Image (cartoon, rainbow, N blue to C red; front, side, top):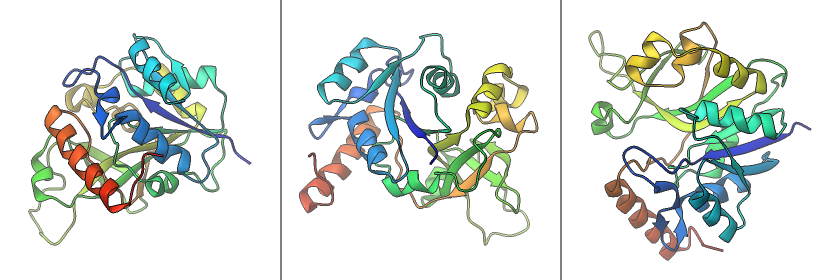
Length: 251
């Protein structure tokens, strides 16, 4: 059986919202909600928060969340997960963004690899249909175009594809769940930031610009990335309603 380690990157000094990973959501820190979804996913062997700040590890200790201290020099989540891979051996590493407290275990399970060689350089990313038309013009919502087999062709912060020839299509957007082999993480570590990555500021271009396939897996996720205090308030309201209805619990 493959060893699959889940990793939740959570650096403290977020540019737009410092300390968001430990922000309170209905009596629990944000990373607690992500961690609970992660450990409930079938196939996950171990799970850790990867951080660079003791304020985050202190909160993890309160809630018995395993953690790995990583360097403050990590500039991307790819570098942080790579560093985890040098400390904790596994066949596959599942990344779940620490600012996705609404993510369901089912979306994580969709990224559990099937019939994939752990020794290969494999990278897969979740995607979903973009439901809110406003999100098409939200630069924080990354849009995706794939080939017929589901491999990435381009990613953008602007709407793609452009509806010149037809309008009966669905936009796809990035979901913050990813799967890597150690070889793929090593590839990302040794490969310099490229031209398109520097323009769009999308880490996945590290692979796409260098002819490395990225598999995109369709999932039906509830996703609302917390990038601002306003986003946090929206998530609090959603989770409060789910707690009231019994759909979620804090046990």
